[in-house]
Structure formats: structure tokens, C-alpha cells
Length: 214
Length: 274
Picture 1 (cartoon, helix red, strand yellow):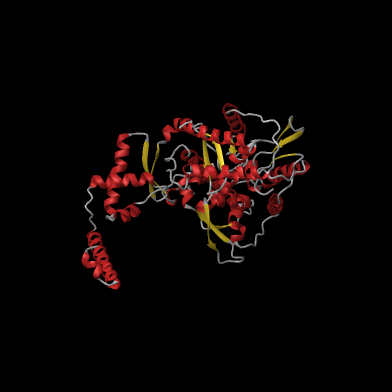
Picture 2 (cartoon, rainbow over the protein chains, first blue to last red):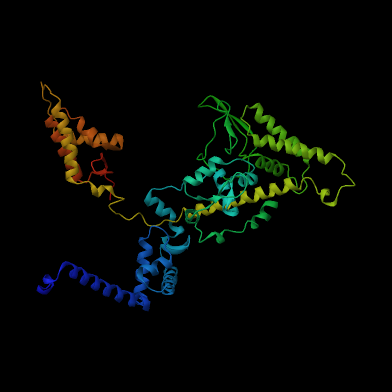
């Protein structure tokens, strides 16, 4: 603060501070309205890669564009050329779209060695009953417990509980019918664990028809 | 017995195999086998993996190589009931679903035997088996879908993302400071003070012995609450040696200390070779 500022009363000081802040905000807004923070395509690509790398979950272009305050289309382009770069390089990592976002992961071809290093073994995560229940929920969602019973021909309370515990399914409200049963659907975690971009990537259930009829 | 596979031992008839038992992906399964279980002196009976009546029915149809669109209801009903009898003889807790299906099959069988009503409306002339066939096909589709999910999950398990990034929150190791260690030490020291002890013969424990003791305790238990370690000290002097030992092993990066919360327990474990 300058000598002059000390002579200002408290309220005037506060006022001055607010004014300064307003100016700063305005300056930022102008920048944002332009939509073009001066980020070159190369720089944007580099930042995007870094963000996808540190993100705990698959990261979508919208989130990145919000953080960087750049047009989403620019981020889309950056991701696209990044993905191409990853493919071209044919390295140990891949950049792939999963559960509505992008994620950097190892390529499956390397799994043996990665596992050897991590000293981890592939774990069979779900029982047959849980898998079948999950399949019904994935294709019929939102679906109620009685509807699952109809298809599976057997009660599946413990399977439902397991799937809820593993966060693979979520409650999707109640069905407006007798008894108002709870409806279930698959979660984002389901997409991640089964390597799906979105639900439309699941093969059509009718494709299993031929298989079933033999 | 809800949706657990029908694989049970004679003596444990009600025990459900549980959700997390070894999952097997196989279309409903093998013929029943009886094998003596030597370890437990029991007979182990395997009836295949029947996830309920539809599964059992599908299995029977496949085994008899029957055209699913033209099921000989009488034959399949007999087969089905034979299986139920076997299961009952073995004193397996039969799920109600199995009995419901048996009733439906018998009803179907009787309807097939009756001549069709020539005066019946067109839509009532429908094959009485249609509904069952549709249910079976629907069920089998979802079995196939479950297989698909299983293989997707298997592929997905071959893909790894980066390890968790270290932050103070998920790495309590960095949160243990010398002061936390001192606090625990002070507590034990204070507790020792309260006990009036007659030290008749002082047993001297050397630093080397103490290091050996700590190593052994960690090796045998995998991880060790420092309080437990300090409490073994017989005297104040031994306690000091114990404390120095912990410091020494941490310095040599032989052990690492973790503390989940402030003033919580400090746990020592062998340091992972980083």
C-alpha cells in the first residue's frame, strides 16, 4: 500500500479492493468470451495428455475444456490427434475412450509382464449367478427384481447385493406398479470394468438368438 | 438355497455356496457324480451348475439333443422329475422354484395329452409349449450375454491404468513424523512410570538383540503395532533401546511406519523394496 492509501478510511479501502477485483474478473471474462486463450495446438495436446494421465477416472473433453477455458472442439481435436499419435507409436500405452471419457492405460498385449511385475493375478470377480443377473440388468434396464426373476427363473437377492456392493449397478427409482418395486440399472463403474464406451457398445441381445437356438 | 449352484455336500444341506465361491462359466453342467471327499469324510455330490429350474431344463434338453422348438414334454417332464427325486433323495434343500417348474411341466404334459377343442378360437390353438420355449430361449440368450460379459471382463483385466498418485490423503506413511513417534513413546513411558517395579536383576538387552527381536516380530506377524513392541520392554532402559531400534530400522529403510490418523496407532511393517 502506498502512503496515500493509509489515509483512506476502512470502507474506502474495501471499496477500492472490490473495484480492483471487479476489474480483474472483467478482464478474465473478456478473455473467456473470446474463447481463445492463447494456447497453441501443440500445447493444448500436451496439457490434455497430462490431465488425462493424472485423472482418476476417464476424463471427458467437456471437463478439460472447462478447466482450460478453451473451446471443446479444440480439445476434441487435441484428443483425436493424441489418440492417433498413440496408435502410430505402437508403444506400451493406449489412449482409449471408455465410460464417456478418455483414459490412458497399458495395452492388453503386455498384461503378462505387467502382472509379473505387479505380482498380481487375474481375479475372477463375479459368480455365474451375479454375471447372469448383471446381463439381465444391463439389457433390460431399468428393471425390477421380479422382472429379473422372470428371466432367470430363480431368485437372485445375493447377486443383486453383490452387484450393488461392487457398484456395478445402481437403484434407478421405483416402478409405478403394485408394490412399487425398486428398479436397477448399470453404473459408470460397470462401463469401466467391462471396457465399454457406453451402453450402445454392448452387442445387441438379439445377436445371441442364433447362438441360443443353435 | 437361492441362486447358488446345486453343488452341495451331504452333511451341509442348507449351506449356500455363496456369491463369491469359485465362479465357473459353463453351460449347465455335467452328469451327477458322487465322489468321496477324503479330507472331510463326506460324500460330495455334484449335480452340475444349475442356476434354477430353467437351467436344469435347458441342460436336459441339450443332453437329450432335443429340438428346443419341439420339446417332447412327457419325456422331458419325466427326466426333470427324476432329477428332482435324486436331489430330494440326497436331502438337498430344494428351492421352491424347482417345484413350481415341475408343476408347470406336469400341467403342460396333461394339456398336450388332451385333444384340442375343435371349437376353440384360433388364438387358443397355439401350441401350449410356446410360452415355455420362449422363456427357455430368453433365458439362454441371457446366459450367452453373461458369457460375453465374462470375457469382456477378462480382457479388461489385462489392461492396467496408472497406480494411484501419491497424496497426503492416500499415503499415511508420509504423515508419520518424529513427533508422532515420540508421542507413542511418551505414552508407554508414562505407563511404565505408574508401575512400581522392583528390578532385582537387570537383564541387559543390546541394540543388536533388540533389532533381531523387532525383525522377528515383524516377520512373524507381517505388521506390528508399535505399542505391542514397546510394551514387551521389561525396563525403562530396554524401552529406550527399543525406541532407538525403531529409529534405526526406519533409517536403514528396513521397515516403514504408517499411521492412519493423528494420534492413532503406528504400525510397522517390512519396507517394500522400492
